[in-house]
Image 1: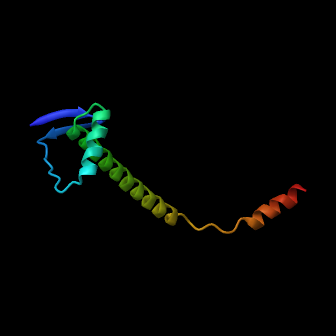
Image 2: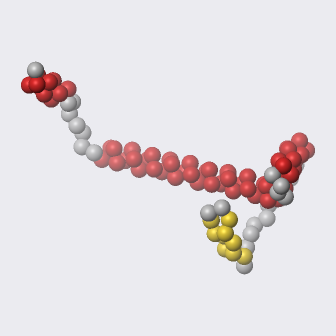
Image 3: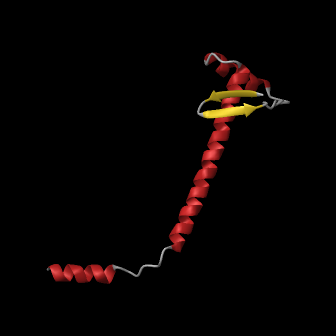
Length: 95
């Protein structure tokens, strides 16, 4: 069992492996160059890309859920009448 802390999250357990088949050479070369320019291994660089993507998906899911919760909250509020007559009445009194 492995436990470590990385970029605001703890990981405890065994790690999965992933094999990518039929990766086009230009994509491989681009990834390898990007990893090299950041001083990282190709594996470490790809893991960071996958982590960022997974975190972004989780953030988007959370935002969708928050929007839906907000919509339900708005729908639960009592309907308000048009305030235009009240505003006009208030303005008329102050003149």
